[in-house]
Structure formats: structure tokens, C-alpha cells
Image: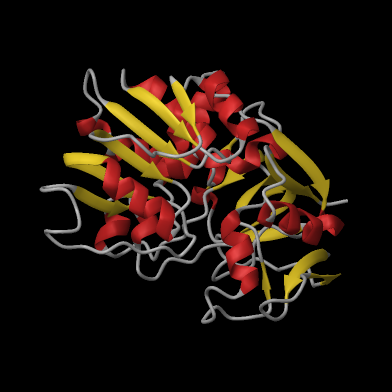
Length: 318
């Protein structure tokens, strides 16, 4: 089968041939129909996580077909099944979690081997190419927004920094799950316009001048975005970091608002992905994708790096 393989950090992915993986036990072979291109993939390729074992097939937003199941979405957190997070249904927090495109070969290929059918969610009429980004771009902000609901009471204001694919979903989740006012933040005028069409009350290029925000969702994660989040959140408010740009912020009584909550949020549970899928299947959320052939994987990563992708790019095997 064809696959886009990362052979060394900081170099273009190599389109090469690999054996079709042979499953044993409960493993299921999924014929890939679409895999979303994520900033995490870009970070891996650039070498931000040097301990990952290479060669590696990237791609964790995967949808395709499985024998006997039909069109499926792949849940990307394959836990050990026995630890406390796994037993609580939070497999994405398992310390031994296997993740396609990270610690196991992912979906930048004609096929991917999934450990168990329990990680496959039926698409029930959704096009796999369009559905692929739900596995991360749809799931991750859903969990992050749900975690902020105690702060999103009547009259609250939330700022969402970064209106890429995750930010576009986040706006819709805040609108669906709360009555909070939404301030969308992005340097791109195009993305600010998109934010307004999705339900943001205001779209700005920066948080300069804002104060006393109840919630700040940072989907970028640079030093600058984190600093803006901490500066503008109110005492007792919450900052949720989702973006993996490598930024840091000082923590201490003199550095963050009194009783402010600073937390990270990663991926989501299988149950949460099921809820996202239901929202998609019932037409309560909308999103756009741009399909590209797998052979253009390096072009896709370049476009993502340069901020030239308003929609989620999805790689399609030929």
C-alpha cells in the first residue's frame, strides 16, 4: 500500500510502499478514505517530539471503511484498558495510550490497523472524507468547551483565540451549550469573518483592551497568546490551553489572576466523540473540508504552516 512516511525529523514526508498490515485477534483493518491534516502532524514532522520512533506514518484524524462495519470514524486514543483513566472512560489520559500518527502508524496511507472495533464509530450516512476531522478538530474543542461550562453562566464572556478548524468548532459548541457572549480572536480577517457567520458576537485581531473575561480558550498556544489569555481573564476565571505551539506563561500569585484556573485540555473520550458525531449527523454543527490527494501531503503541511488553509485539509488515497 502507499503511505506518506516520516523517515527523519525536519525533512519532507516520503511517499513510499509499505506492506498492508496484517491484523490478529481483535485488530481491524480500516481502508482509509480520508485523513485530516493537523498542526500536531506539522509539529511532529518538524521534530518537536524527538522521542517518537521513526519511521512513522502520520495522521490521527481518520475515517474509512471496515469489513462488516461499513463507513467508520476512528477514535484515536487506544488505551491500555486497565488503568484508572481507562476504567473511567478517559482513555486519552492513559499513560500507555497508543495514538495513530504518534506512537502507532496513522492514516496517511491506504489502510490503518486499529486495535479493536470498539475504537470505530459508525458514520451512518456521513461522507468519510468530510467526517475525518471530527476525530480531533471536532472532538478536542468539544471537551475543552464542556470543561468550561461551570464558568459559562448567563452574562459570561468567553474569548476563543485561533479560529482555525478547532476554533470554528469551538464557537459552535459554546453557542450550542451556553448563552455566553463569544469573542473570536484571529489575525486573519478571513477567519474573523468566518467566526461571525458561525455565531461569534465579536471578532477581533487581538485581545488588547479586553479585561475580566470569564473564559479564554487558547487554541494557538504561543507565548504571546498565553500572555494575552492570562492578562485578560478575570479573577476566578479559567484559561484552557489546547494549542501546541510550545508557549509558556509564568505561574505565581503575582503572575495570574487570584483564584484563576489554568488548565490544558487534550483530545476527548470515546463518549465525547460519539456526542460530536451525533451533532454532526443531526446537522447541528457545520464545517468545511478541502480534499487533497495523498501525494500532495507535503504541500498540505506547507500550506498549514503558512496559514493558507481556512478549511480542514483532508488527504485522500488515490
